[in-house]
Image 1 (cartoon, one colour):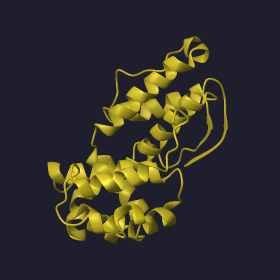
Image 2 (cartoon, rainbow, N blue to C red):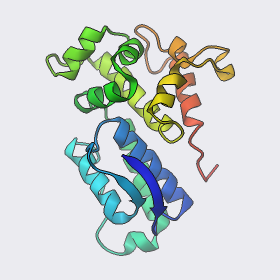
Image 3 (spheres, one colour):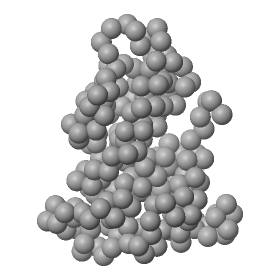
Image 4 (cartoon, one colour):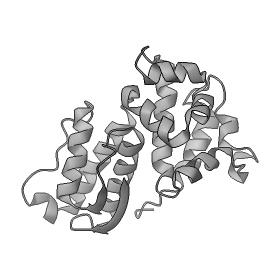
Length: 206
């Protein structure tokens, strides 16, 4: 779905491009982008489509990219707007979209293991037969953001393998070892896993 081959101003600015790629990865992993639409060029026309899809999920509806030439001549302004968009995505769990997308990427078995519930419960929540409890939605959204970060470096097979690979940064444990049972997103283990995933995103500002 997302395979960027080229960029046009103002997305040629490293800071703008970075924020745009982060937003694309998150929106994709959260299931907000249509499966039949391809994004190959970073430009205002394509990214306005992305923002419209995000708006349809009730997220960041006050954020717009504008129709004039102001963003083309003000990369810092667009970078700040995209930073706000990324913050909105980070703060907006949408389990009704995220279940389907993460099931596609991770598979039912790994997804149920990481969220800490049975595969049958995943199927019920995925089919909207039951409302996703807040604590489960929180873990699901955490995983969506993590998969979004990983998607810049790995394909879907690589993402699945990443969770089971032991890491020195985690004390010789695998990410899946720290995401077991009824874990909470603010705990030390999950935050370490999150930091490991985000380290794959190399911001041009750092």
